[in-house]
Length: 189
Image (cartoon, rainbow, N blue to C red):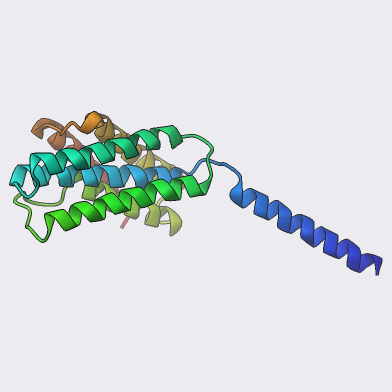
Protein backbone atom coordinates (compact mmCIF):
# COMPACT_ATOMS: atom_id res chain seq x y z
CA UNK A 1 0.00 0.00 0.00
CA UNK A 2 2.82 2.41 0.91
CA UNK A 3 4.59 1.60 -2.36
CA UNK A 4 1.46 2.35 -4.38
CA UNK A 5 0.97 5.69 -2.61
CA UNK A 6 4.66 6.57 -3.04
CA UNK A 7 4.54 5.62 -6.72
CA UNK A 8 1.39 7.71 -7.24
CA UNK A 9 2.96 10.73 -5.52
CA UNK A 10 6.16 10.30 -7.55
CA UNK A 11 4.22 10.06 -10.82
CA UNK A 12 2.20 13.16 -9.93
CA UNK A 13 5.42 15.03 -9.14
CA UNK A 14 7.03 14.01 -12.44
CA UNK A 15 3.88 14.99 -14.35
CA UNK A 16 3.77 18.37 -12.61
CA UNK A 17 7.46 18.92 -13.35
CA UNK A 18 7.06 18.20 -17.07
CA UNK A 19 3.87 20.26 -17.28
CA UNK A 20 5.64 23.21 -15.69
CA UNK A 21 8.59 22.92 -18.07
CA UNK A 22 6.30 22.98 -21.09
CA UNK A 23 4.67 26.24 -20.05
CA UNK A 24 7.68 27.98 -18.51
CA UNK A 25 8.93 31.00 -20.35
CA UNK A 26 11.97 30.24 -22.44
CA UNK A 27 13.70 31.45 -25.59
CA UNK A 28 12.52 29.98 -28.88
CA UNK A 29 15.27 30.45 -31.51
CA UNK A 30 13.44 28.40 -34.17
CA UNK A 31 10.32 30.53 -33.79
CA UNK A 32 12.46 33.66 -33.93
CA UNK A 33 14.06 32.52 -37.20
CA UNK A 34 10.69 31.53 -38.62
CA UNK A 35 9.24 34.96 -37.78
CA UNK A 36 12.24 36.70 -39.35
CA UNK A 37 11.92 34.60 -42.51
CA UNK A 38 8.21 35.36 -42.79
CA UNK A 39 8.76 39.09 -42.27
CA UNK A 40 11.39 39.17 -45.02
CA UNK A 41 9.20 37.27 -47.50
CA UNK A 42 6.18 39.46 -46.71
CA UNK A 43 8.21 42.66 -47.13
CA UNK A 44 9.51 41.45 -50.51
CA UNK A 45 5.99 40.55 -51.69
CA UNK A 46 4.73 44.00 -50.75
CA UNK A 47 7.64 45.64 -52.59
CA UNK A 48 7.19 43.48 -55.69
CA UNK A 49 3.42 44.10 -55.66
CA UNK A 50 3.97 47.84 -55.50
CA UNK A 51 6.58 47.75 -58.30
CA UNK A 52 4.38 45.70 -60.63
CA UNK A 53 1.22 47.63 -59.85
CA UNK A 54 -0.50 44.59 -58.35
CA UNK A 55 -0.76 46.61 -55.13
CA UNK A 56 -1.82 50.23 -54.93
CA UNK A 57 0.27 52.59 -52.81
CA UNK A 58 -2.57 52.62 -50.25
CA UNK A 59 -2.68 48.81 -50.09
CA UNK A 60 1.07 48.52 -49.73
CA UNK A 61 1.07 51.17 -46.99
CA UNK A 62 -1.71 49.32 -45.14
CA UNK A 63 0.24 46.05 -45.33
CA UNK A 64 3.48 47.76 -44.27
CA UNK A 65 1.73 49.36 -41.29
CA UNK A 66 0.42 45.95 -40.20
CA UNK A 67 3.86 44.41 -40.70
CA UNK A 68 5.45 47.23 -38.69
CA UNK A 69 3.09 46.51 -35.78
CA UNK A 70 3.95 42.81 -35.90
CA UNK A 71 7.64 43.66 -36.13
CA UNK A 72 7.35 45.84 -33.01
CA UNK A 73 5.79 42.92 -31.15
CA UNK A 74 8.53 40.65 -32.52
CA UNK A 75 11.21 42.95 -31.11
CA UNK A 76 9.52 42.70 -27.71
CA UNK A 77 9.74 38.87 -27.84
CA UNK A 78 13.15 38.48 -29.49
CA UNK A 79 15.83 36.86 -27.33
CA UNK A 80 13.56 36.94 -24.27
CA UNK A 81 12.14 34.11 -22.22
CA UNK A 82 8.46 34.01 -23.18
CA UNK A 83 5.78 31.37 -23.49
CA UNK A 84 5.33 29.40 -26.68
CA UNK A 85 1.79 30.79 -26.97
CA UNK A 86 3.17 34.29 -27.48
CA UNK A 87 5.35 33.10 -30.37
CA UNK A 88 2.49 31.06 -31.83
CA UNK A 89 0.29 34.16 -31.75
CA UNK A 90 2.91 36.28 -33.52
CA UNK A 91 3.57 33.60 -36.16
CA UNK A 92 -0.19 33.25 -36.68
CA UNK A 93 -0.49 37.00 -37.29
CA UNK A 94 2.31 36.79 -39.86
CA UNK A 95 0.55 33.88 -41.58
CA UNK A 96 -2.71 35.85 -41.73
CA UNK A 97 -0.93 38.90 -43.19
CA UNK A 98 0.91 36.74 -45.72
CA UNK A 99 -2.35 35.07 -46.78
CA UNK A 100 -4.07 38.43 -47.12
CA UNK A 101 -1.24 39.74 -49.31
CA UNK A 102 -1.35 36.59 -51.44
CA UNK A 103 -5.12 37.00 -51.93
CA UNK A 104 -4.68 40.64 -52.88
CA UNK A 105 -1.87 39.85 -55.31
CA UNK A 106 -3.90 37.03 -56.83
CA UNK A 107 -2.17 34.87 -59.36
CA UNK A 108 -0.25 37.68 -61.00
CA UNK A 109 3.15 36.49 -62.19
CA UNK A 110 6.30 38.14 -60.91
CA UNK A 111 8.28 40.11 -63.45
CA UNK A 112 11.67 39.55 -61.80
CA UNK A 113 13.88 36.60 -62.57
CA UNK A 114 14.69 33.90 -60.06
CA UNK A 115 13.66 33.45 -56.43
CA UNK A 116 13.52 36.35 -54.00
CA UNK A 117 16.26 36.60 -51.37
CA UNK A 118 13.65 35.90 -48.70
CA UNK A 119 12.64 32.65 -50.40
CA UNK A 120 16.29 31.69 -50.68
CA UNK A 121 16.82 32.36 -46.97
CA UNK A 122 13.89 30.07 -46.13
CA UNK A 123 15.25 27.33 -48.41
CA UNK A 124 18.78 27.58 -46.98
CA UNK A 125 17.39 27.46 -43.43
CA UNK A 126 15.59 24.24 -44.30
CA UNK A 127 18.80 22.78 -45.78
CA UNK A 128 20.81 23.72 -42.69
CA UNK A 129 18.18 22.29 -40.35
CA UNK A 130 18.04 19.08 -42.40
CA UNK A 131 21.84 18.75 -42.54
CA UNK A 132 22.19 19.27 -38.80
CA UNK A 133 19.40 16.83 -37.94
CA UNK A 134 20.66 14.14 -40.33
CA UNK A 135 24.28 14.58 -39.25
CA UNK A 136 25.41 15.53 -42.74
CA UNK A 137 27.25 18.55 -41.34
CA UNK A 138 29.98 18.19 -38.76
CA UNK A 139 29.01 20.04 -35.58
CA UNK A 140 31.28 23.04 -36.12
CA UNK A 141 30.26 23.51 -39.77
CA UNK A 142 26.58 23.26 -38.88
CA UNK A 143 26.99 26.01 -36.30
CA UNK A 144 29.02 28.13 -38.72
CA UNK A 145 26.41 27.77 -41.48
CA UNK A 146 23.64 28.72 -39.06
CA UNK A 147 25.61 31.68 -37.77
CA UNK A 148 26.27 32.94 -41.31
CA UNK A 149 22.61 32.63 -42.29
CA UNK A 150 21.52 34.33 -39.06
CA UNK A 151 23.90 37.18 -39.90
CA UNK A 152 22.54 37.53 -43.43
CA UNK A 153 18.95 37.42 -42.16
CA UNK A 154 19.69 39.98 -39.45
CA UNK A 155 21.37 42.35 -41.91
CA UNK A 156 18.47 42.02 -44.32
CA UNK A 157 15.97 42.78 -41.56
CA UNK A 158 17.95 45.88 -40.55
CA UNK A 159 17.91 47.05 -44.18
CA UNK A 160 14.12 46.88 -44.22
CA UNK A 161 13.39 48.48 -40.85
CA UNK A 162 10.50 50.87 -40.85
CA UNK A 163 9.10 49.47 -44.08
CA UNK A 164 12.10 50.63 -46.13
CA UNK A 165 12.70 48.77 -49.38
CA UNK A 166 16.17 47.52 -50.15
CA UNK A 167 18.18 49.05 -52.95
CA UNK A 168 19.33 47.02 -55.92
CA UNK A 169 22.90 47.07 -54.54
CA UNK A 170 21.74 45.85 -51.12
CA UNK A 171 19.75 43.02 -52.71
CA UNK A 172 22.78 42.04 -54.80
CA UNK A 173 25.01 42.06 -51.72
CA UNK A 174 22.59 39.79 -49.84
CA UNK A 175 22.32 37.56 -52.91
CA UNK A 176 26.12 37.22 -53.16
CA UNK A 177 26.34 36.23 -49.49
CA UNK A 178 23.55 33.68 -50.00
CA UNK A 179 25.38 32.33 -53.09
CA UNK A 180 28.55 31.88 -51.03
CA UNK A 181 26.70 30.09 -48.25
CA UNK A 182 24.90 27.87 -50.75
CA UNK A 183 28.22 26.95 -52.39
CA UNK A 184 29.63 25.93 -49.01
CA UNK A 185 26.50 23.94 -48.19
CA UNK A 186 26.78 22.09 -51.49
CA UNK A 187 30.13 20.64 -50.41
CA UNK A 188 28.25 18.43 -47.94
CA UNK A 189 25.68 16.87 -50.29
